[in-house]
Length: 312
Image (cartoon, rainbow, N blue to C red; front, side, top):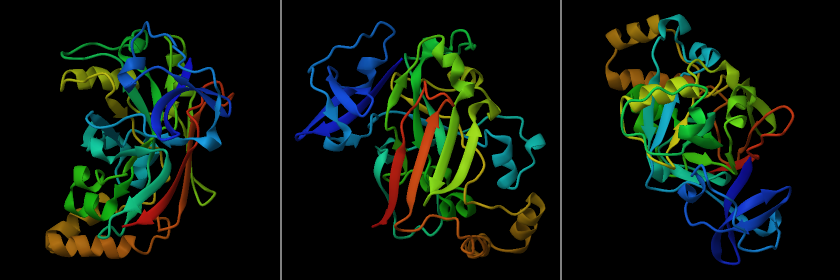
């Protein structure tokens, strides 16, 4: 298992091998350079650079596919106002790759966004091109997935929900922080994905905490279905859904249907925003967000995401 990161040091961008609280520069230009099964570490410098001397960058940049799963945890389905028994399908959507940003830094709230939300998620990193329908199992998952990282599916709920615009509400610049580290897993290590714990805090308050074994659709099931739908390429990301604990609270399905029948779309949108605005859990300028993805024993650890919310 290797942990790598992309960083800026002395005015230049580099890739590095993470060693405790420092990084060792390694040879490579793009994330895809490290995803091949036979990749071996090639150190470009023996110097270990302390983390306090570098600026972490996003390991993933445009162009690439950022594929997302929605409502992949039972408790999250309940908090969005749906009955888990009614969901027998895998929900997919996309985020713009221009939303990718570093795991340490600022989430920029657009001026028009009132209801800014967080979603901590594990992201799968695609190893090789998938250009036709395949059957992925737990045994061959490592052939298609090189490793994992941590992502935060930042969401403008006042655009996503009342307008029904998932892509627009989740694709503003800086709305997809990833990292800080990429963890490359071998065929045995990748089987430990269900052991990973994902957590998120806002201003030191725990908001999300769950194990990946609670996902409804496993990575193998998800990749099998996606392969019958679209072409996927090395370095593409698959965000696997968020557990419960987001700021969004949704009315029941019956209330939503009644509101849609009684009021215009514009009126429904105003009612939704007015009611949600009473919720103090939505992100505000100056809020601090910390998220982690690791096993209980710490043997697999993607590092801590540290963000703050700023405004345009």
